[in-house]
Amino acid sequence: MNQFYDRYESRAPKARETVLFRDLRAILKIAKNRAPALRKQLKGVDLDAITDRKALALIPLVRKSELAQMQAETPPFGGLSAVRAQNLKRLLVSPGPLFEPEGVSKDWWGAARAFHAAGIGKGQIVINCFSYHLTPGGHIMESGAHALGCAVIPAGVGNTEQQIDAIHYLKPDAYCGTPDFLKVLLDKAVELGRDASSIKRALVSGAALPASLRAELEKRGVAVRQCYATADLGVIAYESAGEGMIVNEGVILEIVKPGTGEPVAAGEVGEIVVTRLNSDYPLLRFATGDLSAVIKGASPCGRTNMRIKGWLGRADQTTKIKGMFVHPAQVAEIGKRHPDLGRLRLVVTRNGEQDVMTLRAERKGAKPDETVAETLQALTKLRGKVEFYEKGALPNDGKIIADERPVG
Image (cartoon, rainbow, N blue to C red; front, side, top):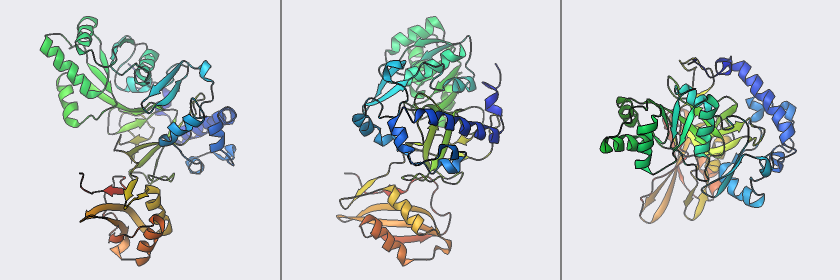
C-alpha cells in the first residue's frame, strides 16, 4: 500500500492554501446563485478578495445550532444546498431532526483518506457498524471504503450475535464503527467461541477512545485509528502515525474563540469552524460547536496539512445566571474592550441561595482594573466580581463560562 492516498497529502502548505482558496472562490461564485442562505451569508463580500484565511475570517459564521430553524424556514436544507433534492443520491435524517444531503460523486463524504491512513485498502473486507437507518454514519464510511475498492458488510448497529456470525464466516479484515462496540464484538466472540481474529485494523469515530481502550484493542491484535466526522461535513480530520489528527484535504479548518468568529493563535483551544469545498453542499464557515486546538508542526507520517488535537468538548457554554442568559460572545467582548487582558473565564457558583458570578482575567502582573467589572455589568446586566491572574495562569481548555453550581 502506498504511503499516501494521493500526492495532495504531501504538497507544500503554501501551495495547498493557494489551491484551496482558488477552488473555494470558484465554488462560491456558482453556488451563491443556487443557495439562498449562502447568498445571504456572502452579502457585501467580494468573492475575488477571499484569497486567504484573514479574508475568510471576515465572513459571518453559520452555526450548527441554527440549522433546525433554518431548515424549518427554508426546507429541506435551510437554503444551504446548491443542488435540488431530486438530484441528490440520498436524503438523510439525524436527531433533531436535521436533514443532510448526499451527492452522487465518488467518496462524497471524504472518508477514503481516513481509511487509507488506517491501513485499510483495496481487496479488503470492512464490517461497517455505523447506523444505516436514516442517519449518514453508515453511508459516510461505506462510500469511503468503496472508493478504495473494499467490500463492505453493512452491519449497522445492534444484532450482536448475527454480526459475530458474519465475522466468523466472512472474515472481514477491518472494522469501522464506535470503539466501544468493537470491544463488545470481540468480547462476544470469545463468549460464543467464534473466531474474530481476522479483524486486524479499525477506523473508529463517534465516541471517546481513551488510551486504555486503545491499548486493550491493540493488545487483542487490532491496530486502531480514529477520525473526526460530523453528519453535516463528513470526515473533517483523521489519525495516522503521530500525534493528533490531520485535517482532510478539501477542508479549510479554523479554530475560533467560542461565541465569536475570531481565529485564535495556534495551540489555543477554541471552536472548530469548517469550510467545506463541496459544490453540492458548500458549507462556508460552519461552526460545529466542538472544541479543539491546532498542533504546531508537520506530522511525522509526511502528511503536510494542519493537525488538530481531536475532539476536546463542546463550545456552547451559554448559561442562565440569576434568570439571565449569559453567552460566551459577551465574555469575548470584554476582551475586545480591554485588549490588555489575556484569557478570560466566567465562573458561576452559589452562595447560599444566590448565584455568584466571578470573572477570572489574565493581566500582566495581575494588576487590578476596576473598569473591567463595569464592562462585565454593562454587557451582562449582572453584577459580578473580577479576579486578576498573571498571564498564562488560566487553563488552555477553551472554556469561557464554567458553571460550578451544585447539581440538584
